[in-house]
Length: 279
Image 1 (cartoon, rainbow, N blue to C red):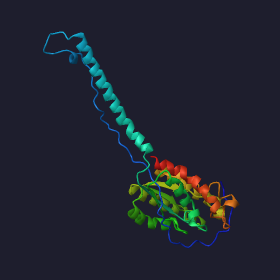
Image 2 (tube, rainbow, N blue to C red; image 1 turned 60 degrees about the vertical axis):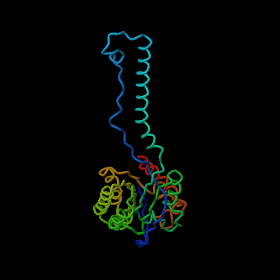
Image 3 (tube, one colour; image 1 turned 180 degrees about the horizontal axis):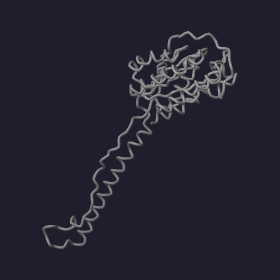
Image 4 (cartoon, one colour; image 1 turned 90 degrees about the horizontal axis):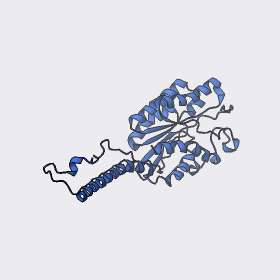
């Protein structure tokens, strides 16, 4: 999808990040024993005395046989329970605490609309009903670039120790015509830092109008595709999908969605986030 040219506003000046105590979570990883419990095997020698030549009565033989069979069946049943129950826990236990950090720009900082109308808050409200112990820290700043995000990320990882990081940056770089290789290097470095911190990353892609030519606009969008493939991270192809070309969902600047467009952003992101939360 190619965006039409727009008159670019003056570059946004960074404002204070919204650090909202919000809710979001995932289930605990599970371990399946690699050494199953030994199953009892019934041998003929178990049914006769090794020190006596006396023939066992038929009723005694039958009773002993039944005891061995019943014991083996219960052992097998217990083994099956051990192997199945952790999997059930991983799917159903959504009460474990999990922390998510959003590192973004004005699109995630509710620029031009009330904070409670922004897609981050809307997504938090939807997730909190299912994941009661998730915490969301919105560290997005209006006007943020990939360079600024890269400079802030280390402190955010150290302070919050997140399980998942949503990386929504690059739009301001593209609107200002920054070199594509610099944008990619900054995003790649942030993905590396997130992985090194033991967290999962979700990369949120962006498109820009062709003000600097179609080659630059397509090259910019391709950065996100390439990084997601190279670093094996979850990708939201385009945050503003089904929003950017609908004037009724955009603010007058043609860049930022209005309050009416925010629910669609949630729909664009939430399926990918739910997938991360369930694995």
